[in-house]
Structures are given as C-alpha cells and as structure tokens.
Image (tube, rainbow, N blue to C red; front, side):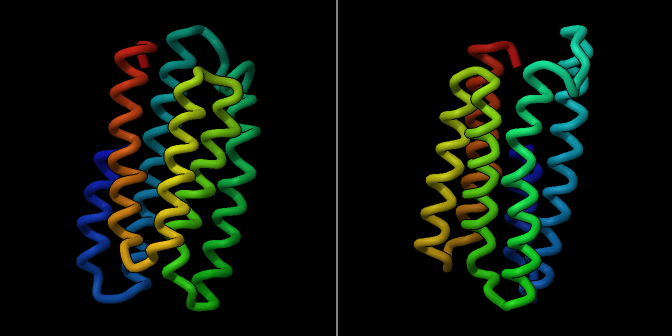
Length: 155
C-alpha cells in the first residue's frame, strides 16, 4: 500500500488539474483498499478465522465510520472547491479509523493511527504541501509501520 501511495504522489504531482489530482488519489485508494482486503483475507485464512468475525470484524466496524465520513467530506469539499483541505481530511480520518480499529489489534496499530492523525493535522495547517503529506502519510507511514509490524509481530 505504501509503494502505491508513493507512485500516486508522484503521478498526482504531475496532473494539470485539481480534478486529475483527486482522480489519481481516489484511484490509489481503491487499489490500496483492494490490496489491504486481499492481504487481510489471506492472513485470516492462515489463522483459520473468518475475516468478518473476531478481531477482524471488530476492526472493520470501528474503521469504516471514519472512512465513510471521509467519503462524504470528499464530495462536500470537492463540490465546494475546497480541495486544499482534502489531504488533511483524508489523513486525519484514515488515522482515526486505524486508531479506533486498533483497539482490537496490537498496540502499534494505535500508534500508527495517531501518526496518520498528526500528519493530517500538519496537512491541514500547511495545505500548500498536501501532496507531500499524502506521500509521507500514505506512503512513508504505511511502509514504516508495515516493516515494524512484520518484524515484531510477523505481519
């Protein structure tokens, strides 16, 4: 997921229009979500637990409301022309979802969520650097925490 976000940041920075920038990032969100779903399903199969029960189901029930809110706010901000608030909104709400969902996971997941939230706040305070914060958050933080989780917790 982090690698696709770094590629998306590179591609988004080269778009001639704000609509193109948003389209690149929304496309990456779909791609990253698909990667996460496949990886989570494989992990659930290895452990012999259904994806939607136990901790996985609890995580998703806590994670989805902030993601749905992000979708609604994306439409509202886009249609009102406040595109500079999108990176901070996305990072902040994604982080909120990870942090709340992390209540049903290993402690480092909550730290990861808080890191995304802080990156989102920075993006809201410095909107001119939104694409850089998107790369740092969705790219860098996913890679950093992915490596830490893989090394310390086996994936």
